[in-house]
Image (cartoon, rainbow, N blue to C red; front, top):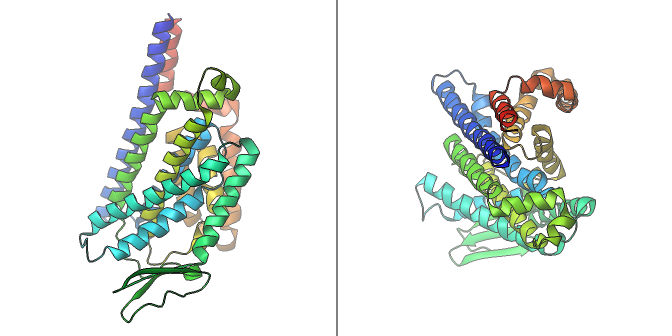
Length: 358
């Protein structure tokens, strides 16, 4: 009976994973059809890439918050690292890689690598903390990263690359270009991000996180989340696995930042502030900690909702807050959860199989 119960649980997990992929692919196909037929407004078409970027951010943060059980409030910092390094590298590689999709892919890889490195460096002193202390320190590091980019200047000319801090002392030669201009950010970005690239990045993020969740490392993450002391007593290296989750999450956030940045002609560091970290955390909490599909749906809904409420002018943020509070209260109500479960065929089937196994 124990073996049957285990098999049923694995089948239920496989169904949930399959459902997530199907929903994402179906949503992509639907948006492409609506866009091709002209039924999708220009405003909505412009939001498709940011929605994909926020979906990846939600998946990345869910790995740390939902799967590992640690609270991080600095993921906007990793997003900004990916955005600035990715956009800057795309500008530098314009002549070397003229094919835009290839340049976008390289820029996202570079942004992801720099964000992973930042996550590793920050994780060395930070990940020995837990709970509220970890949240406060990650928040501080996120603000430090924003301040660094607000005071960072990077230029390129025929003599190479030069940079300076606090003020523009790059001393570029004639014909040179100031790429990062401190608080002015990066301007003149070529918009090479596409909805298809965003879809591919979401699928890659899903594959990475789901493979981690169902691996030995994933089981270690969940053991740490459920009982840190018990996990440590059976030989699980707490710091190592926390670092693994943190760096993986930072790398995905960096790739999302690069995708996001190259959807706009200008980006500034203040875009990736504390509010952005809180917004992504809301995606995770609203969708359900550890529920990847839920965080994806929440990211899409809460990114689109403010734009849909724009017609209400000054009242739109008030309405947005009211809707958010109502949804949070509803999703944490046992009666509402039971009602919604009745409409989920996968949950019902898993429950019946579990009853037969017992």
